[in-house]
Image 1 (cartoon, rainbow over the protein chains, first blue to last red):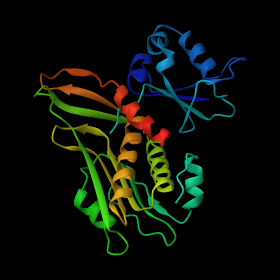
Image 2 (image 1 turned 180 degrees about the vertical axis):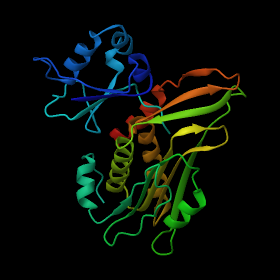
Image 3 (image 1 turned 45 degrees about the vertical axis):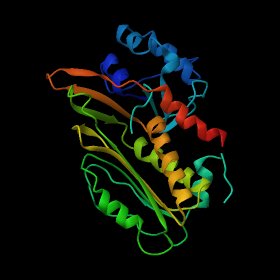
Image 4 (image 1 turned 120 degrees about the horizontal axis):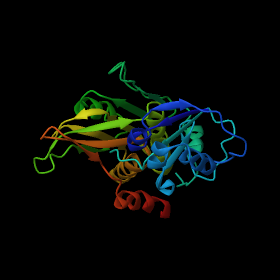
Length: 83
Length: 191
């Protein structure tokens, strides 16, 4: 699964994207965020307040309760500030 | 037209005849949306180039059924002389897709005839435009409301992020999302 990071999430993690193989038991977006947070200091810094983190699966916004299903690309980013 | 809270997928079905153009940074100004025979004119773009508001609005106001055109332009402030530029990061692909989705949703709620939503990315200096939204309709009410709706959701659901570059040469922080923007978008759910 491809993970893409944007804005300060990208900066704190230190990379813009990566391919990951999810361990068993990671079912929802929330599970994914929790697992990522435990991968090291940079991930912990980016995801210290997971409740404000926004997620998109294959370019569509989703809630943290959304199953990852057959997601090809999961994007993780802060609240948007365009316009 | 009945107002609906259904997804933009319904809108896409209803306006299947609408044609839209999306432009990538590598193909600026490569074409303009044209009138779909059964739908509205959609002009959705994400680009680094300056936005030619005159050209965009002229196209939307082409002679015909259009009796009203409302435009909104968002500019980069200088923040009291502190700011050298705003850097706009975006999520390519999703940005265009979300803006088109918002525009189609607007078309299910109001009888608009045309809609342009153009957002820049990259470095933007104070005084330059960041975003342009324009809606045309037969009468002004629909154009005003659709433009306001479109802008509220451009701020809260189109994947763009602003970062400050300061005149003293240092990098400022990421601009924080405002609760007031969420509230502005949220009010449309209550209509």
